[in-house]
Length: 370
Ligand code: AMP
Ligand code: AMP
Image (cartoon, rainbow, N blue to C red):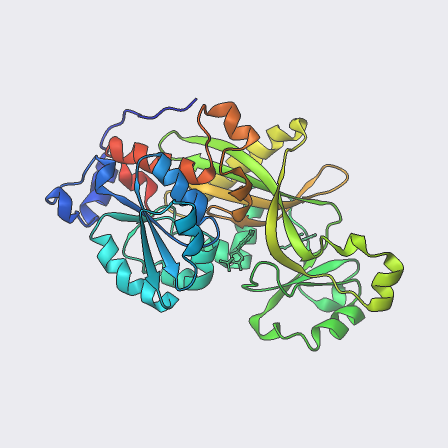
């Protein structure tokens, strides 16, 4: 059910967080409970359209920080009250301070992290929606794996040594831009042959068991205000050329020497077999519970488990994204799942804005800031 206002109390912990926050110019040094005193800001790419639209729907003033030459969609769809154009990503820091004095709240997404880098994100002065503490767990493949294993999830095997390859593996380069440059191998020989002239080699890589199954990306939302985990929807990625190789006969693939790549181009909505939902909830609960042991107050807001579902209906989790994922984009008007729970179209972008709005109105903004 859609609850526009929640009642709450100003806890001691939140009060401390508030004291650290920069009071805005237009609230005379007091922390305002009026959402008109705040701005929702995001970087114009990835999921910015639904984040900004969702924030507007919840009544916020919205700001898109737009790399030069990319403002057209944000103007055309009318989602941004303000567009601030920047020449380069370095310029972001110049406007960061100014926006922080205007009670701006930054909503991070995949492109924001990709362009600014995990470490720089920690330096952002604006209020930041989500857990900054969790970023290092997510950005370091070994820490991420530990987190997921301790959450009792099933993960594909990792091969430390290429000599041990005894079946299909996928080689992933660190910091790969949306799956670009990954490759497959079946034997140590094939691995050495294909990695030899790989341009991404210096970035470092991981050799992961390749699971034959279907990709399922589960979108979650955990609110610290309600203490509840929500399943927002599912998607699969539309990847080039992995998703078009089936259009070429096996004979042609071999003769032409087609090599699979996983460059992300878009996202396709999925509705999951209903009997799998209890497991989906349980996995999400475990990840949140474990995050509370490893990183301060733990993970909150949107996150995503990226998995391959095999023919035995076993979920193999290969990654977690601790923020909004672009797979939520097909659901700007809500998903089949959010429609069950809310009686307004609830995108993940709007769910974030709702969380922030409720936090502001009950004087608990510290609960949604990292
Ligand atoms: P972009 O702003 O489109 O250049 O994307 C920056 C990064 O965000 C990419 O390198 C991807 O890692 C991620 N990304 C962007 N769009 C998507 C998408 N539709 N699905 C998954 N990841 C995405
Ligand atoms: P990633 O950049 O880690 O999200 O992976 C990009 C794509 O590679 C995914 O969307 C899957 O299609 C595929 N993929 C990644 N890991 C595996 C795996 N262990 N087994 C099978 N396919 C995978």
